[in-house]
Figure 1 (cartoon, rainbow, N blue to C red):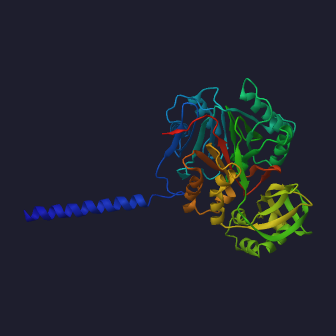
Figure 2: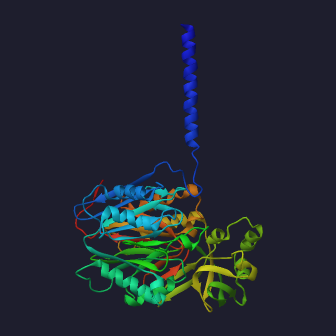
Length: 467
């Protein structure tokens, strides 16, 4: 009997040891280098009524078709009503042609699909999601008080960037359907390829819409290894890597938005005296890199000499900006500038937005925690003029240069902070290689290291049930 008890004790100890080992092995699950552990493969939430719904869904499943199915199921909650538009974001591990094919296969040939590639994952109310196999996120919207259209155009089919923008706008408006809407769109969402034409597109679109339509969005993200070659965007049944995509909204209720940076001004400034748009050669008649390094207190030069830092990421905390204004209204338009290994040899800076001879530029600096907290305040800032606005959904566009400077173990805080201001309203966010947005009273601009948050107004009467 005693021997039996001893045997049982030994087996109990062994079993306990195995349990401990299993727990330890689980806790040591490999963590993707760009984010937190992937413990859940998909998720989302559907908010809906008989008239109107909004829902978000996401998946990190490596198979694109499966990931799309999981995200749609979570975002649409089994409703039989089709959304007016599906806004989709995906990392470059997913082929955009397969993204379109999978969504159209589920929703049919008339489905309106709009989106682009996101650098470093996606963020939704339940957190920041990424995996080594990629991530897909989407926002499904049924908005009975709105008319929506999606269109795109490639630079290869147009004589100029201006013609490309006009063609995409015409196609998006035609896609709204009959009866055709009158007047200018209430809002345009935009994405462009990283081809240096964002300012040209915005200038044309602003002129075509009488300067009254706010345009927000972001340049499609690629990867450090392959650059712009693996960035892309989708429009209905088309996937493209050149040109731009637009989604136009005609709404019975106005949109609200915020578009800004999260940096502190330093008082240091100079005048660009030689530039090729996105290659800044001189500031105040001296090599641009030399002046920029002085403004940083020598930190940029030290990082260059050290050779261990990624200068694109490092300089994301030290942007330059110019002031854009109309009358008494002014805003700071930030630009991400940094020295590449090649440009540093000639004392130049490269940038992701145009700066020209005669532009007065200022030096700013920031920290990851300030950037994070200011991002969380964007929904509240968007509602400053309409604090009682009824909101159906939200859209976050964040520069990947901002995200890269937020430690991976803090990126879930993006969702936590935004949710404090959004409550249970669905929203989605992605990370871009340039940002387009509207400064109220001034106009539409392209910059870098910026973040925008767009609020979709509720257009149907009554509240939204939640599932």
